[in-house]
Image (cartoon, rainbow, N blue to C red; front, top):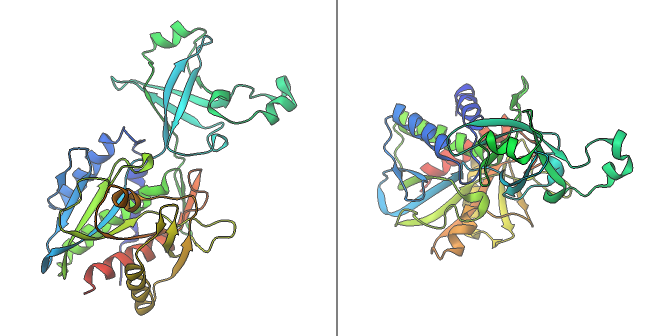
Length: 346
């Protein structure tokens, strides 16, 4: 089955370059809505801001839902230091060393943007020697050095920066000629681009669906409650399209769709996993089954909230998750193909 690689990359590049840490997702959600409008696809918006697209199928009482989350890691201003630098706390779970030296932007309540760089409080070995090397990378030992002539707390406050302002990090998005994508926030914007393209493909090809199928674009996954509410009322199967995590002692791959058997929330539904594997085998879709001990998903959130649903978790392999990440178009296309085939399966 032929898919338009360039259109997927177009969606992905646009989504990646719109900042959207959890709690600051309005702009990227507006972009999703604009693309749905172009496709002439109706959607609804939950009270919490998630976007839901529903495509009617033959069976309207048994609904399948695919989810992807558009919110990312980020940070928030905690305080302004006496020297004018900014202290911050993370949004979502990432290692401080993964953002050290990264350029970033602080955006205040009035859309003013001030750039800076994340540094440790001892950033120079010429000044601090081994103390700089050995300093533990924790929030209290990190700060944002602004690209402004500031020398005091008052100078920084006069720029319009206040406690609670959102901070986002440069994504450094790169598409290589041989199919790799390198960027922050492929978790989970790669999946959001996949679902947007899947909607386009299903609609434009007038594909008949055996079951009503919805696509839930979540905006609070990184803080644990993205899909905890407002799922379509007839949801019976919930497939979180997130990511696989290749790495040490893992089975996942950047070149395949990864199917999670278990994460920190426990095992995913065995029946759904068997269906997904069967479709991969039948259609020669490259796949890997894996277990992620320090992982949770929107499916996990839905189960914790009490939804009586069967859940699964799939996604392209994303190397160095919650850091400067990498995946490959092979994994993206394998994930897309599994979704399209699953949508058509009885």
